[in-house]
Structure formats: structure tokens, C-alpha cells
Amino acid sequence: MTKKKSKFLTFCCSLIPGAGEMYLGFLKQGISIMSAFFLLFAIAGILFPPSISFCAVVWFYSFFHTHNLNSMPDDEFYAIQDDFLIHIYQIAAIKRILLERYRIATAIVLILLGLSIIWNNMHNFFMYIASDVLNISWGFLKVFTWFSHLLPRSIAALLIIAFGIYLIRNKRKELEL
Image (cartoon, rainbow, N blue to C red; front, top):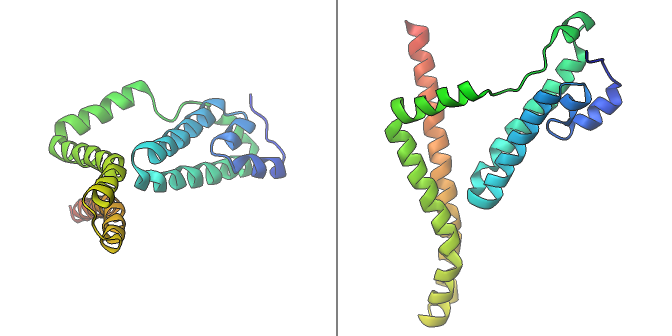
């Protein structure tokens, strides 16, 4: 059985995603949140920098979830079961949805993600070729560098906006029915 803890120490632990839940005794929830945060952080750092914004979403969720747990009445708090946020069967369902229902959209996102990674990895090589071999002016290279860093982020931003509009339209259709 988990027990409520000090509000100050809960606040300190809640600053690290998942640590607040673990401090309150919900180890499975804490591990799930911490894993999600650091996985997204690694993806953002290594593969796709625009995905760093999803880390903020996980951080805010963890912060407020910890404080909501700690501020619950005792009977509700003690009734909460510690469980992982995502289970294997849920991952299979998400996989099925992405590969069957949204096959083309998933393929486009994966292709754009791969192109973005290749673009970021090859950027330094292109800059070396352009400056040392082809003797292209430094002003043009600065504009090219700015554009090449902006392009993948802009594409990601447009995809996120399009997905948001899609979600709003579907919600509106549900409400009209």
C-alpha cells in the first residue's frame, strides 16, 4: 500500500518526470513516464530535434499528475492501483491502427522523418563541398544553412498543425452527429 508523502519533497521529485510518481509509491507509473520522457528526449537529440516539444508534454503531465495524486483524499489515493501507462496489447492495437487504417499517412511521416535525418546528417558534408570544393560565397552558404535547418522543422510543424486540424474536424463531426 502506498502512503502520502511530504508536499515539499513531492514538489522536488515532481520536477523530474516520473520521479514524483515513484516517490509517492507508484513505481510502474513512474517508470512508464520516465521511460517515455527519456525516450522522446533521445529521439529529439539523436534523430528528430522538433520532437523535443513532446518532452514538454510528458513533463507537464508528470508534474500535474504527481500533484493531483498527492492532493487526493486519502480514500481515493489508497484505492489507486499502480500500473503501467501502456500495455503490450495497447501497443499492438496502436500498431494495427497505424498500419491498417492510416497506412499512407504513417508511410509519409516515416519517409519525411527519414529524409529529415539524412538531410541533417549530410548537411556538414554538403557545406564542406560547397565552401572548399565549389568555392561558393559565404553569404549564400549562410542562407543555405539557415534554410536547411529551418526546412525539416517547418515540415514537422506543418504536419503537427495538419494533424491538429484533422482532430478538430473529426471532433466537430462527432458532435454534429
